[in-house]
Length: 173
Ligand SMILES: Nc1ncnc2c1ncn2[C@@H]1O[C@H](COP(=O)(O)OP(=O)(O)O)[C@@H](O)[C@H]1O
Ligand SMILES: O=C(O)C1=C[C@@H](OP(=O)(O)O)[C@@H](O)[C@H](O)C1
Ligand SMILES: [Mg+2]
Image 1 (tube, rainbow, N blue to C red):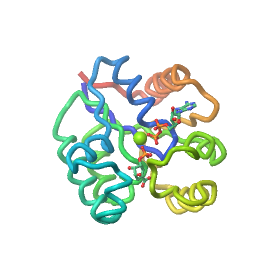
Image 2: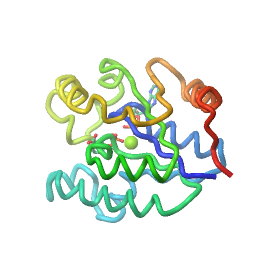
Image 3: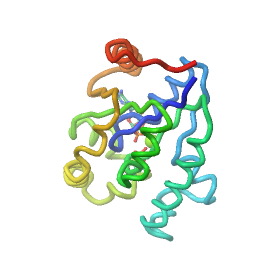
Image 4: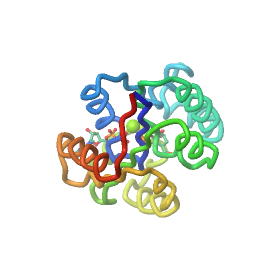
């Protein structure tokens, strides 16, 4: 079984759907943000505050390349892991990439009361609108694209399976 990588903007459900997908396929889920927090011994919010975003991006890239050396994982990335072209290339070459999306309104509804996303601090609706525009296109390299708006996790898993068949993709041996 090859490694599966979930990408998508913040709040599109990568961590949540990845957990269910790993359970369904009998794989281990590794959430990159959780790995970074464990490695650095602090929360993502603390890391941004104390060391800055550039430092976070360096750790994120290291964690990604280490995880991609293993098979049989479901890796749930942070929404900005696709910003560096080298990371996108690594993902495309070393796993099956699934992109999740949702409307701005749905994302804001899901994350507005969550203090754990430093890039959405202040006015979450404005931050989502601006950042989502800035990052438009960076998630398009995934062969599977799922709009999660208004859908249950079960429906999302079913749509992933449907697209696997339609696009003649395999989970690997
Ligand atoms: N399909 C869904 N429908 C409604 N709420 C969802 C859905 N998927 C995730 N959520 C909720 O949205 C929030 C963000 O989900 P999360 O999995 O952390 O997203 P990501 O990892 O992409 O930032 C969580 O509170 C989660 O419970
Ligand atoms: O989009 C981003 O730049 C980020 C997304 C977050 O992960 P989620 O997408 O799981 O919220 C987390 O990695 C960090 O706050 C930065
Ligand atoms: Mg997440």
